[in-house]
Image 1 (cartoon, rainbow, N blue to C red):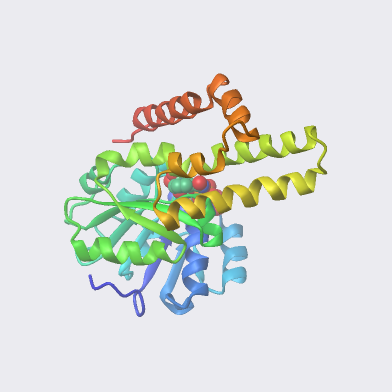
Image 2: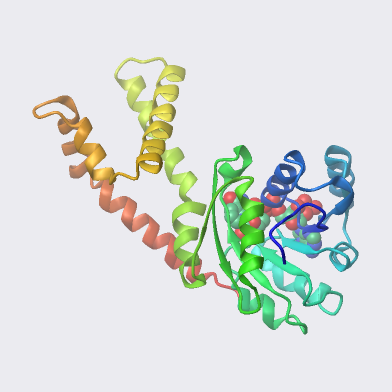
Length: 274
Ligand SMILES: NC(=O)c1ccc[n+]([C@@H]2O[C@H](COP(=O)([O-])OP(=O)(O)OC[C@H]3O[C@@H](n4cnc5c(N)ncnc54)[C@H](OP(=O)(O)O)[C@@H]3O)[C@@H](O)[C@H]2O)c1
């Protein structure tokens, strides 16, 4: 499949939070036209509301939506994926492409529920996609071509950065970047509390914490420098930062974060469907 979304028909089966974010971004950027987009949800009243909001066709019939699409995005909850794939099986062909964003659902589970060799690509985005600041890891199933992967990257570049990885790393990605915004929000909340403790108004403390995190992240991404070197540049001998770092080390921030990601990755593996 050529790497150009324009002119492609796309079906979003399960246009909830994540499916909706991607769908809206593609429409907003003009990569999809409303007339070539068909979304589905479980409830009729939600279909009506979404159709009115996005001005695209929204229904509850997955077969009708998937049948004529070039790309079928699976955005339902992981436990619903198998039912949806079985439902559309027999109505789709190997000329189409399935892109699944479901956590803990391997491409092999989707492939084994389809009688045709439909290419499947797995994508693991995160919620900052809603502001175009997302991180999406992408991996290919056994029938997907490099062009299918390129097309999927093209889709997710509209909502942030992408990286192509081997599927064996998907549980690790789920634990690091898909769950990651939750860890960062806790860190930001704590830093804001700290600001309040040292006398700042809460709104100022939250702004300082969030903009500092954003700035530090941009420096890591844009310079490519190792975070340890960047930390050293802030840490003046006998200054204030080193005192704070000693507290962080004593409180085991570093090892706690590592253990948190390891736990989440184990859980993602345990939850694996199929
Ligand atoms: N949220 C995240 O941070 C995140 C990150 C990475 C990956 N994901 C993945 O994204 C997927 C969706 O998560 P979400 O947070 O977006 O969930 P969500 O908001 O609950 O969206 C799920 C959508 O699926 C619809 N649906 C349920 N059964 C259906 C069916 N049989 N046919 C068609 N549509 C159906 C629901 O319809 P109604 O609205 O009518 O109930 C809802 O719109 C999950 O597999 C998750 O693992 C989420």
